[in-house]
Length: 155
Image (cartoon, rainbow, N blue to C red; front, side):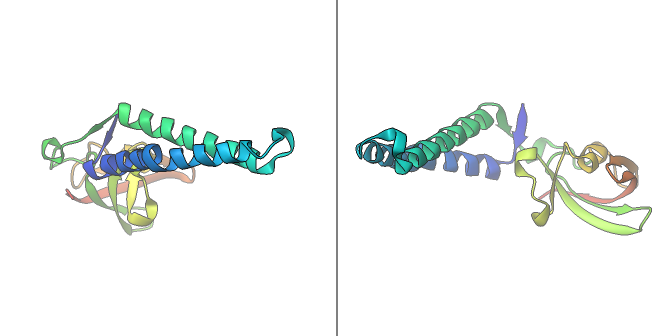
């Protein structure tokens, strides 16, 4: 079971709807046109249409599976005094004295450029459940990081 923000759940549902209602019918039409052009063994257009059809079907199944096994999390039921999913955490790397700020999200929402890290990442997993002032130790590929929680807020 994965938990998603309402925004991400809606984004995935919209993409799935777009693929099913608009993209897949067009792909099927393109495939039929390419097949009508004759010998399929030497038909690059047909092979390309089949490849696109396969990718589209694969993406549809993937998104369906995400939605089937995901639940929208209500931010009102999350603890405000501890780091949890959807928390915005400001912390200090005690070794380098560098301050960082990230939102803890599900793996499907992770986006480092937007300041969102997965709760399953080494840093995200280490921060979960901690309170302001506590030290989290994250085992990363570059070694163990000691992180002091400075602030916790909700979006």
